Image (cartoon, rainbow, N blue to C red; front, side):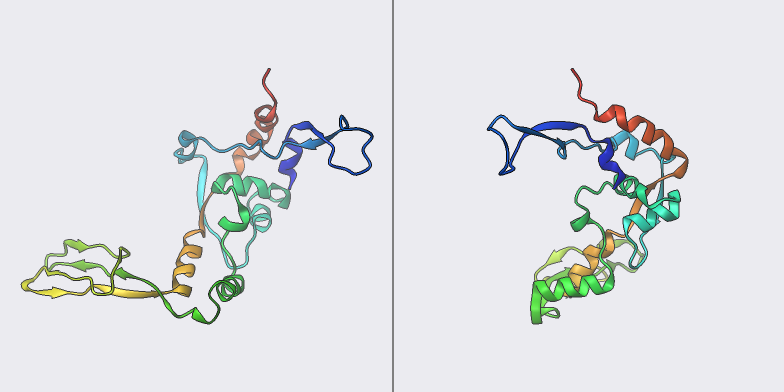
Length: 195
């Protein structure tokens, strides 16, 4: 990742066994320094395009598609607001299945929780939104017949739950290519230590 070349160096007490003394230092990259796009920058509609990550795409393949070079993978991650790529980048179908199998074993189809289904009255007004976690026996008054109740509930399996989480990660913000060079030119100054 070319991003690391922008990180400042710092002197760190050497953890090496062959050091000369306890005062021996090694130069390392300060991995705790990071940048993020400000809230006002994130709200700027001219800075980003929306992008849906396709099956099997990685930050480097998306960078090649948008910026013509896989070494701008860090720019994809920056635009998407990702801090931990391992946990925030969507998995491929195979990776998701293997992850779920490892996490749940034979309980892939066991119920994780119950959630509401959408309910509207006869006029089309929303009475109950979909996706609210509830108990299996949750009921509401029937909006078109107050003497009866509805059970607008569906079960969500462990696999469906993980699939929904993974699917929600697929839509990201991509920094528009015309801003790439401006960001790169400003990056060096952002990482410098201030006196």
